[in-house]
Length: 153
Image 1 (tube, one colour):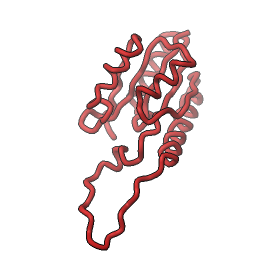
Image 2 (cartoon, rainbow, N blue to C red):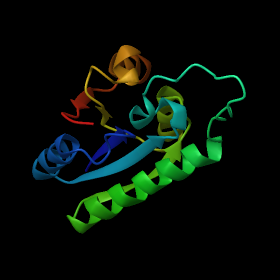
Image 3 (cartoon, rainbow, N blue to C red):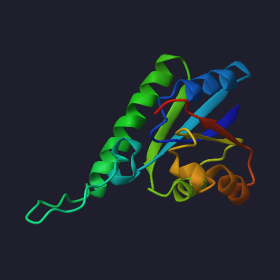
Image 4 (tube, rainbow, N blue to C red):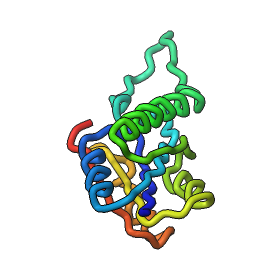
């Protein structure tokens, strides 16, 4: 049985990732452990808009608390596990540290994997690609790393 660690957040429900999962399942027995880093809400692509300059007497917007980031990540994880298991795929997972490398470390401390799959937003908006996450994971864990960019946000 091949065991795959999937690190994803905003692109967890992408068609591109689902296609890769189908390919891995077709190649033989497989199970997937999904790690969804609790990306701070301010760092989500849907919030990547210019912040207006503060206006005298304006109300400052406070960043969403870490609990909101965890709640959003858990909702994504739950939906992905439901979608995969409904398709007959063995899948489970957890919400991880906001830092995707630390999130992967947490997973590898308790599970063994044959490959790491990193799903990211398109290169033009992906923080993880700008931080060379696939390369960093490969260097740290000495496992094959497959990068799956989503075509759309």
